[in-house]
Amino acid sequence: MNILVTGGAGFIGRWVVKKLLLDGHRVAALDDLSNGRLMNIEEFGDNPDFLFIEGDIKEREVVGKVFAGGFDLVYHLAASINVQDSIDDPRTTYENDVAGTFNVLEECRQQGIKMLFMSTCMVYERSLDEAGISEVHPVKPASPYAASKLAGEALTLSYYYAYGLPTVVVRPFNTYGPFQKSSGEGGVVAIFIRRNLRGEDLNIYGDGTQTRDLLYAEDCADFVIKAGTDSRADGQLLNAGLGKDVSINELAYIICKDKNRIKHVPHIHPQSEIQKLLCNYDKARSLLSWQPRISLEEGIARTSEWIAVQGVNR
Image (cartoon, rainbow, N blue to C red; front, side, top):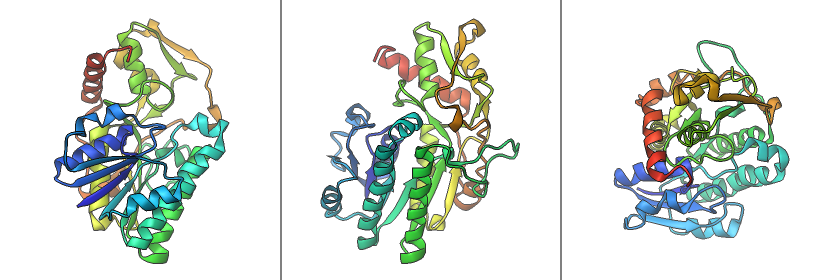
């Protein structure tokens, strides 16, 4: 197929691009490089089936020109992804995650192209359910980022119901692995590993009892691609995660093995914190026969090796 990946130079986007190329597809990656990085996709530069396009999904003319080539499938991953940035500057997050999504959806509608929308587990209401959070769990937009993702979800599914356009919404839980940034927010595993390799303390927001369900990047990419290529996912909303959660305190100890180097600092956005994130991915397992393959321990080892090779100061 001829496939477009918006946000294709981003962390998850580059893994989706890589797997699609390995599967024999032609892939165009559209990215404005506000979050993505050219280093993420440099290994694909000599592949004749890969095309990188620098452009912004907020610009309708740019999106129209990109779609002029014709695509069979669109993976829409481009987005503003930082919770704190969305609190400080909600307009930018809205324009990227809602208005930009509308532009992509409209092109897909006009050409009858299936679109997958990448959402997030951050849309969910807090839960202490040991069975994990399923797709029917209540949502709570505790940040403009979560609200914008929920709006993007609703738009995406409305095109399925109103126009019969094949669309699917996915909510991966906390994804990590090689190529994730180790600065800013959202890359807690990468941040902890880099600080550990430097011999620095590991700083935890709040008391560290909050838990995360950590999904390795290649497992996430496999899930995203399955959801996009399998018609059984059309019109569906699907979770993906490891199915096991770990507290941030435990995660820090797994990585550094020294409690004296684990420090707690004031939370930057406690109002948007979800205390327990544990994924129930039964729907994806039954519908798509998908399940994660990489354990947390193996994923941390692979990520540590990659960061060490890259150099801890990069």
